[in-house]
Every structure is written in structure tokens, then in C-alpha cells.
Image (cartoon, rainbow, N blue to C red):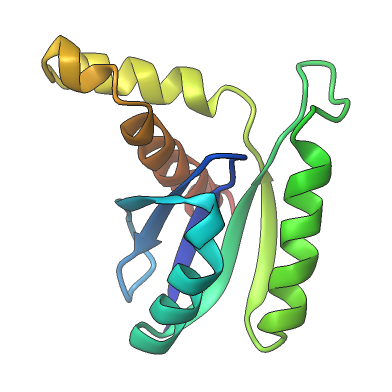
Length: 136
């Protein structure tokens, strides 16, 4: 059984999470500058047995597209073209940033570390991936 890679795509930074080989739990991996994302994904696909990409699908509260939806859809099409043998799923990412911020706060991390936006992106990717695991 391969691993799943969770992706919280952003214009500047992209949060990345990965599952264990049994696909039970999602763990935050890192945050990557989006302009370096293609190289990062290429390397991780070579190093890990990636079975599926799980990408956050940005929506407004009413279900309409956000400012980021077009960029995410373009990224998804590129992933599908580059890695046709790897499944790709999108999952609603509404509230993940808010939940991530609350989780970070509840974890007891110091205030300065909590202000690190990259950490929020990584935790958001983890939430997206864990939600997919829980509801598939």
C-alpha cells in the first residue's frame, strides 16, 4: 500500500502532509515555497511510494469559487498530466486554516512560533489529508 500526499496549495507557500504506509494517520511534512513545489513533488514521488495526491479544494462559505480556485485547478491539471499513474482527489478545505490555528494554539506552542504562517499551511495540509482518510 502506498502513501498519500496532502497538499494545501497557496500562491506563496504550499503545505505538505503525508500518511504512513498503512494510510492510517496524516502527519505534517513541511511547507514549500510554491515556486519550488514541482521539484519537491518530483523528489518525493521518487523517494516515497505515493499512491494518491489529496489536494485542498478552496471554496467560499456559500460553496462558490475563491480567488485561489483557478490557481489550484491549474495546479491539479498539471499534477494529473505529470503523474497520470497516481490518483488525485480534491477535498473541501473550508475552515482548515481556522482549525489549524486553533490546533496550534491548543498545542501550547509559544506565541512567536504560532505566528509562523508556514506552520499553519503545514497543519492545514495535515487536516485536509486526515479528513480524506476519515471520510473515504
